[in-house]
Length: 338
Image (cartoon, rainbow, N blue to C red; front, side, top):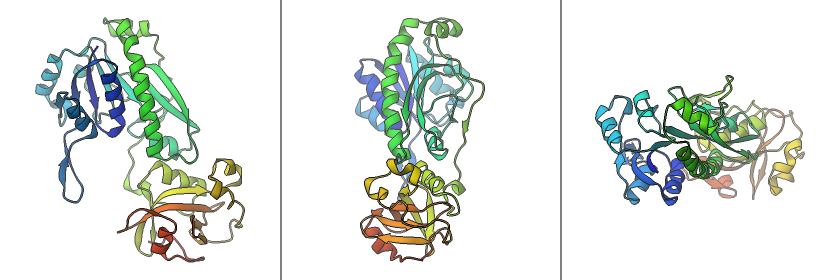
């Protein structure tokens, strides 16, 4: 089939590769414009643009596709049979959705209708979901409201971070999108309602959850929260969740909640620490233990939290013993005081 691909971050690259390797003709790739990044504020292309250029594919970078009539005309002239969208980063208007005769199909990183919106992976981790997955959805004007053609589930592990889970879901999206293409092609063109009926899609339930955009204050840790809640924030917002240490920002990158009921889900090293410190006797954020080969054990609400990897402001990310040398922390010190 002739496919017009829409995507921007690294998450979308495996799907582009998989469709290309499956023998489909990628007539064009639409991605976000180059953005200024880093200390030098150099213009940097999106991962999808970089990969598309490596594959020799034509690339389009509209600032706002909704208002770019010239770009819409160029895309229509490509004669794509179908559009495939994975984390493009803009909402497609109705006239763009109606262009390809076989429709526009989105690879979404959640089990719809749970976590519609731009941050489904982060919110699944933040809310402690036990499983998540990906779905191939027929696109509508509404945000992630379309019927689902295929779906694949995967369990969420306690120690999964958002980047680890994103890699897993990215691979699943690629596999599922390749499976979806022959089904979509076999259903053929025609009125949308009839096409979707031939595909036997699943209409989403009315009750949904929305993955709202994250704000700066979401990333700051509160040591009066439970160890599990803090851990979910660290892993779900990886690598951005932060606290403070002696006036400097400290990003937490890997933690483990030392909870008896979750003991079997912890690393072998962390399991040995469960139950060693009485709970509730020290103020939240108190350093209970400095363990040379593991990290810091810190009090929170309910049970301690093990900090295994972090990044102190002005330093590189590090684990024990380097992290402990940088912090020079001792038992009884308080973490989190800004």
